[in-house]
Length: 292
Image (cartoon, rainbow, N blue to C red):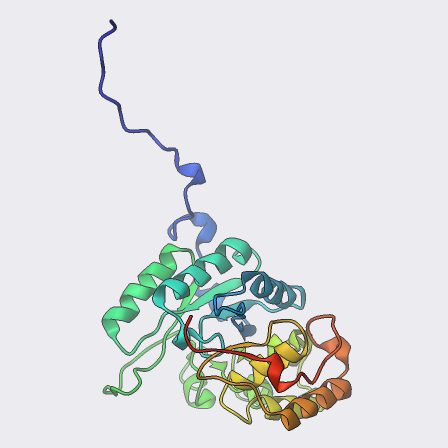
């Protein structure tokens, strides 16, 4: 009998392993991030059982790319990161990078009230390839004033730009003036989920008070209730996502849904994402999920 040899560990080449954050092909400079003008706080759609609807999500992101959006915030307030487990959160960041990281900058919301948790989540986010991290000031447990540079700020534009900080507006109703009058780099937008082409024109096309005024009704409608209630309702009415809500969010009432149909007609259906006719939807069409 031939001499027996113990099995040896397989030598696995690196070329097919998941992309590491330090590899050249995934490096993103600070200047790359600072140059972004239109970043969408992307919506997270759900299946009827409350799990992520990745097919609808991919369609949403593709529409953003096609209409010139340069970056997406994954799992932010608009994307309902506050309703996700960290496993879901990091998975969605990694999915977005793997599918779209070559076409759009992926900024993961890995902030937390806990510094320890925020650091761990950020390390995981970069490990799956995100280009930048979005962090928030600690909520509930307030802290003393700290210092930061080259961060995605969303308030008090002029007080930061006057000190050389790069700032993105976080308010769609103020982003035009912030961009063209107060030196903001651009906007982290909710409205661009619905009308990415018009928001790109607002950020790239020069000062345009006429377009800004034209969008005012839509923006006001979107934020009459806490975000992302209006956005979730609108995308469902456009047929782009299923009418599924993770509680505690619930859809806007019937009268407001009728108002949105009229807003779409005012701005033109061709300016909105999706291809289906906008619908009012009945209350019974919506699915509210408490456990998922």
